[in-house]
Every structure is written in structure tokens, then in C-alpha cells.
Image: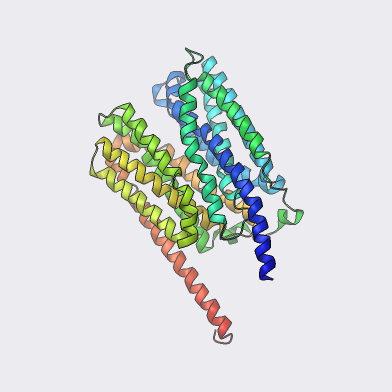
Length: 415
């Protein structure tokens, strides 16, 4: 029996590895979508908006789309298969680029906000790539599959800004109009890649199988995983989005800000090449805890000074902390559900994470403007402490249950 299991796992992992390559490539191309929006959204918004105070609304609409798209992505994946959801997402990415370009050419702020919302829906589908990579994988390979797909974000961090740099003035004076058109072409290439992912439609039995969602999400393991994801991503986003404006307020140059954000993106995704191996070696809870502590450390650096080096160090440490905590939390989610439950559970997890991120995106600017950079960093500490406490309790409960199960196995009448 063990030989058969071993052969089956090897066969599954060989198929999974092919999917990982495609999904990592798709992650890189899809990441260009968000990079283009974040690099241009507030600038285009300031140009098109009826009031300067609305300049960042397109970016908030992207985050809102990210939250709104998570549950529909899970529903489509559950009913028609992941590949169908991926193709629909890439189609939305094409619409993002086409509508964004049209909006800039015709000076429509409302249409541009709709375009960035569609970009958020595309991003929501892309967030499911990391979970899809683990479908059918052996238990040992799952964290590595998640991690390697996330590594595609390194290339997205390079591709997106370069795409903007090369194309922003092509249709002068309509700044960035051609950039969005090229982004639509990139989404078309991504569609061709995800269409080849080997993920058949769910079996009819899987559509109605599994436990109720409430039973799954009330497990201590899921609560810890979801809470750590809810803490790690919004806290990272809070500090990251506030840093460029804070640097400007502190008299630093735009080039200083761009340098910090560039290396922040590298720090976010670069560790993905080995995060999976760390999870396999030490376990997801320890990697999550390390990531949360690094995020707290980044906030501590931010409080210690306002030079360019302080900001750069904050952003780099923050990126590594997010990588460990978010990928580790994603790996924890994979431990909480059965195969037929995966789509609804993973979609619900992402809804919690990006729903909270959407709420935070509308308040981060006000926090910085009204209370300053120090307040932004101080806000990070209480959620981190809460996440570490819940993670510790969930790990203790798991160990306790394992001990009780072992005792009952050895002494069935003892309890």
C-alpha cells in the first residue's frame, strides 16, 4: 500500500509541477495588471477627477474589486472548474486595459474607476492561483507549490513598472493611455497560459460534498490561519501605501520613494523561492509567526527615524515579513479542508483578507494625514500581538488533540 501511495504522489506531483510553471508565469503577467494600476491610478485620478481629493479613488476601487471578486471566483471554480475561473479572470483583465485606455482618451473618471474595479476582480482570480497550485499535490509538496507560484510576483514587480515606463508617452498628451492598451495585450497572453492548466472540472459528487462552511471555519486551525492572513496583508498594505506620501512629507525625493517601493516588491516575492522549503522544514505556524514578528520589526524601524535608509529598511523588512506570514497562512488554510471543500473555503478565506484590506484602503490616507507616519506604524503592533496569541493557542490545541488521540489509541478505555 505504501508503494502505491508513493507512486500516486509522484505522478500527481509531476502534473502539479507542470501547473506550477504555468501558474507562476500567469502570476507574473497578472501582477503587471496591479502594478500598472498602482503606478498610474492616482496620477490619472488626479487628472480626471472633478476634485483632487478623489484622486486615490481608482486605487480604492481596485481593492474593492479584489474583495468583491473572491466569492464569485470560488463559486465559478466549484461549478465549472478552476480553469474556467482563470479564463474569465483574464478576460476581465483585458476589459480592464481596454476600458482604462478608453477612459483616459475620453477623459472619463467614472469609466476609469470601473476599469480599476474590473482590475481588482482580475486580481481576485489571480489570488486563487496559489491555492490552485496545490490541487492534487502530495502533502509535502503543497507548501512549495504555493510558494513557487507566488515567486512569479518578483517578475511582476519588474514587468509592470517597465511596461509603464516604456509606454506612458506613446499617445501623448494622453498619459498612460497606451500603457493600459498594452496591459490588455498582456492579459490576453495570460489567458493563453491559464487555458492550458491541467485542472479538470469537478466531479458531480464534489459539487455537493463536504462539511458545511460554518463547521470548517470554526476550527481553531482555520481561525488562526484566516486571522493571520487578515492581519499580515492589510498591515503590510497600510504601511506600504502610506510610505511614499510619508517620504514626501519628510522632504525625501520621488526617486527615493520609487527605490523603496521597488525593493519592497522584490522583498515581498523574492523569498518565495525558499519559503515553501522553510514551511516543509519547520511547519507553517512557525513561519507565520516569524513573518508577523518581521512585520512588527518593520514598524519598529519606521518609528526609529525618517531618513531614506529608515524608510527603505522598513519597506524591505515589511516585504519579507508579509511573504512569510501570508504564504504560511495560506499553507495553514490548506490543512483545514478536504479536497471537495477547497473552493468554498479558500474563497471565504480570501474574502476575509481582502474585505478587511478594502476597509483599510479607505482609511490609511486619513490616518497618515491626521496622525502622521508614527501613528501608521503604531497601529501595526496590536493586531500582530493578537495574531501571535491566536496562532499559539491553535497550535497548542492541535498538539493537545494529537496527544489525546494517541492516548485513546494506546488505552482505548482510558477516556
